[in-house]
Image 1 (cartoon, rainbow, N blue to C red):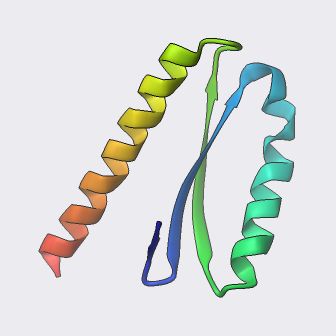
Image 2 (image 1 turned 60 degrees about the horizontal axis):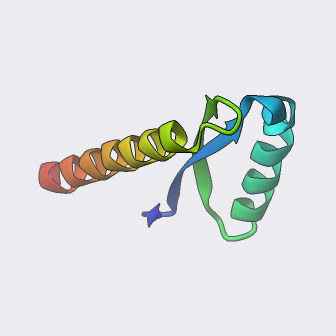
Length: 76
């Protein structure tokens, strides 16, 4: 999602891949930079193979971001 060239993103990963988060964040920042976008990234570690909980966490984070963006639009 892009709002005024601000990209908001959350990287979800299982704990087994936690050590690769820095690489993923760096790659996303490099790609966004090419388009003049400054990404606001955060990460969330989920339990290995716990897809139901991961799905709930992703949904809740998306909902949180949408609410924040709606509030920003209301305040304009």
